[in-house]
Image 1 (cartoon, each protein chain N blue to C red):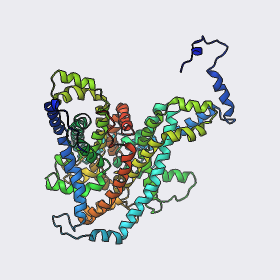
Image 2 (cartoon, rainbow over the protein chains, first blue to last red; image 1 turned 180 degrees about the horizontal axis):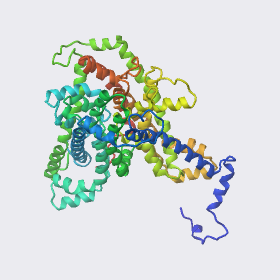
Image 3 (cartoon, rainbow over the protein chains, first blue to last red; image 1 turned 90 degrees about the vertical axis):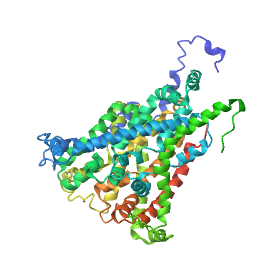
Image 4 (cartoon, rainbow over the protein chains, first blue to last red; image 1 turned 45 degrees about the horizontal axis):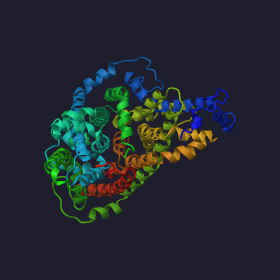
Length: 302
Length: 307
């Protein structure tokens, strides 16, 4: 589209670029200067940020207040104390709940990410009979929400002796369609040359996947792992249903029961909430980029 | 659809590939089969029985479905769910869109605002429920006291008044999810070529007209996707259970007894497994209808790579 005339040395007098911009200005309504619009946007964003952040700050403040102080409206505790935090660990086996949450979340993340990406790779790259049909079946379960299958899932867990066990907390939630869907999209765009190089080296399919494909999918796997860990750590309904034994309670279940025992003692409840929320909030702040990658990839990239 | 047969000379290779493919999908397929597909099928099956959760189950035909139709609590839960979805879906979409536009534009401290908008989503729903319960508590809660100091005498009991509780649950759900949908919409906004927006500006279109005539039409697929996701989350998302369990237990006066919570109660409090399964099946069909829409939007079933 470059016509010969475009090759002419631009004469300083023409200044073709800024001209249209100047022409556009008169169309802006009076008083809507960019600076004013920018200030307005900043104001709106600040108000929204305040609404989003205030409850989290209120939790922090409540956790540091003495119980007499929790009824006030001041965000700053008049006499900040850490005793609520230690009291929570004395009142209930909170360390145990944290350990159960950690163990469950790590195990679910490893299983879901590994077997999910393995299946996704095959569905994207390997030819085998029934592949399209299998993907259609898996995709159809993508939107199946836990609340809808909870009752029969519990019965499956009961039949397979998974109730009241770590395996029961882990296995039934470690196989879902989402990672397969996400990673398949990724592997469809994976450069073929890399696999061909591995093929020439005489790698079998499994070694090719483990040695060549997995390391090259690190950014996507990291994004998937972070979001899986967060959602498992934060999940409540399945752990509540499958683990009645309080030795197997995860943090979320322990807290909901703690509330029943210590209802009204907000400084203790907020301290427990803070301890439960800090790991995920920190993880989010540190690994934000990965989470955002994962959320965006789950959008329209078909 | 069957796979095309590979040329004969590549027979051995193709067989190896076929074996590897089947091996790779086996663990995930078994897991999904046992823990997702089987429960889906069982929900339909138990829906036709009077299973009680203690191992007794007799065939009862359509009795559970008949029961649902004449159960006022079922209809209350359907109405509550519908009201909640009707507030949640447009609310969360519009707010997420506003946030995405703000963060995408010329805004100082964009990274901070993006983080702040998203932050609630990193916290568990149990914590969210407890923190908001503390904020909304009668007389000692922050909001009640703040409103009183602003001159509103005797503000209502926000979680204790049937006219208020559901709206607060909807608002808190929006507060929780809005950052997540903002990120998806932001991705859509960033895919719009800058030249298109610039061209509209050069043609003299003001910022609002550009938004309405250029940006929103180009964002339509993403918007549609977000609306479907939000509808599914509203209908059967975890927040519909977690928040209700922690904050209101379905009350006051059943005003927040949403579908998923009522199903849980019927199954695990009253041991009516058959009846709960029938109701879950009804919700599953509503979800399947939405998934069909989602399938078409994302073109998820299309194999668009050259192979």
